[in-house]
Figure 1: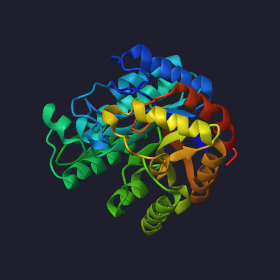
Figure 2: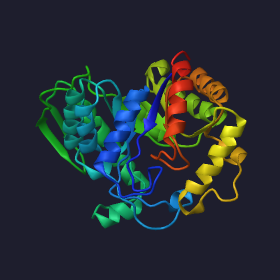
Figure 3: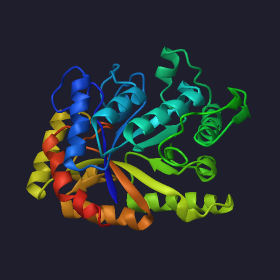
Length: 335
């Protein structure tokens, strides 16, 4: 099993409160590679707020993922880079295919394209995008993924939809990876989403709280859909994002949780216990975390992306990330 890091890239993302800077993001990416993480991931928002996660109101800043990952591609050598996940309605699929191809070439074939339908209505409205219904956004995602996958191939591509048209379109130079960067569909999972995975994607990703038991049910569902669609279910790849809290022993784990409570924006963990936080997260000593990762591996999960905090794409304590790198990643690679 591989272990990735949800790279900190928001105003709230770092141990000490400070304005977001490129230097901080670059440092995080270089640290992740040096520590031995297998991948680093950036999300796709114009801005965000923390009310969804129990934090305070107010917009927080972030970077654009494709350009940020292109820059990281030129400064890293080994670590895979990916979007977790790009919002399909924000871009014409030709742009996504071309940008993904450029990052894949810059990195020597280290790019993964995670993509989804989008959910944050406030940013759609702020930047003049029609939010529409869930079905409308998902329809755009379906056609986008079909077009992107086709553009990763030899071409030319002809496609006419209500949202865009391709006529003799092609993508040259092609990606470094044969067939193009792996496409991951992000979401909680349902038959329509799983049909898209089965027809046009490498695999399915879901975040940030999953128990192995609940995830096993969804993994079985995506494989059943793949079977009905005529695809070998064993070829559907699976990855999971999890909040993480790891301590060398029970005492350190308790100390880290108290530190996380103090750090959590807006007091979102006030009154919670470490046992409550552990539900659906990667929490415990390294041995306990490895037991949990083993359960995911038995289900068929090939990679777990950790967000080293109580909210997405944050690191509240780099020493904990170092502990994961030292005592979890080497053993996880054997799962």
